[in-house]
Length: 467
Ligand SMILES: Nc1ncnc2c1ncn2[C@@H]1O[C@H](COP(=O)(O)OP(=O)(O)OP(=O)(O)O)[C@@H](O)[C@H]1O
Ligand SMILES: [Mg+2]
Image (cartoon, rainbow, N blue to C red; front, top):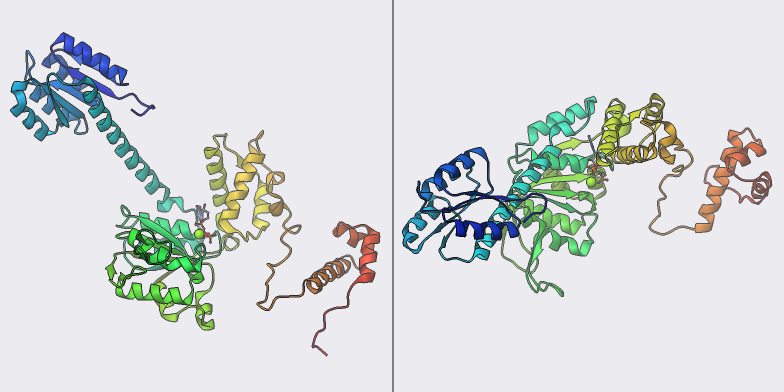
């Protein structure tokens, strides 16, 4: 029995001794037991309360147990009813099961077995109800209303979503990291006719190249060393549902060909097998890189690009959605307050100014994390101030001044690159301070003597070809 709620059972039985035994046995098993000794009382109770389970004797002094059963099932189709009867009532008992009782017990029967039967049935029902509630909650999470945004760019996104969600068309979602690609993909699925079917995600960047094919298409037993059992791929798992191919640009050209073939033929071959397997899957792909550029460079198949780019959805970076920033930040503050069960917070004007000035390289995910951080930092007050924001948002210049380093295929000279960076930093600060070494040293958090020392040792600038 689930510990949260005690399941209730109504026992309708005219023999006092059997009533007592049933009461003791069912109570010992955790049921809340109500008793009726005749049909009239049983009817009253059933009308007044939705019991989880019913145990009813077919022969009652003033009524036929079958009518009680019928009344209970009509009012509460989910009620778990067990019928008890003497040996003479076997034929009737069969009828009772046809009408919807879950079991029949012929007297004398084992009390423990009755308990077990009822318990299993009630638990199964609870589980089903919980699943339904979870599904409803999930649907709720992926309602269009939960995607925040009023900026013109987001309005375009919404109108596209409304058009494409009910369809089977392939969607390509393009956007920088953290702009909500996965959220949009799930939202499309949950608003499509496939919503009751699986949403399966495949992240091409997260799966080593050698395993990607079997992950997508599955394999048969013995297909390769270690394939001890057959396994379905993501395509098959997504059958009748949606397959979300994330970071599609990370696929090798070989895998791109296999994907293209599967999409064209609507059939796949498991690794190690030549038989074709049909599937019915809607594809949503996502990328944070420019696939057209990759097509030009020959690293992404053009035909696959056109197959995926049927309906493009472009998610704007947060820095281009200034209109949405107040709404989004308030949304995430509220979300963090709710999930941490703390009183709501307000965002001061000063904070808003800092948020607006930031360029949000990590987009909405970064904003979400920053707001959660701020809520934690504002433990003793209800107003969030700039001091409560993460360091890299308050002082974006102190960190993240460097562009991500590109490592050329042929490698690089560590010492030369580091010296170059040192040189750029020192000369840059001197330029900023009009040559004032004391101020430049302070900007770099160095002592003046260290700065002078470094200045004297600076390597000459890298050779340039300019005359
Ligand atoms: N418009 C929005 N409204 C509310 N929440 C959003 C919105 N867009 C994104 N989010 C939230 O921001 C977070 C990041 O979104 P998501 O994971 O979908 O981004 P992504 O584009 O897939 O990122 P990545 O490229 O890094 O995988 C999630 O928690 C998501 O719920
Ligand atoms: Mg993602």
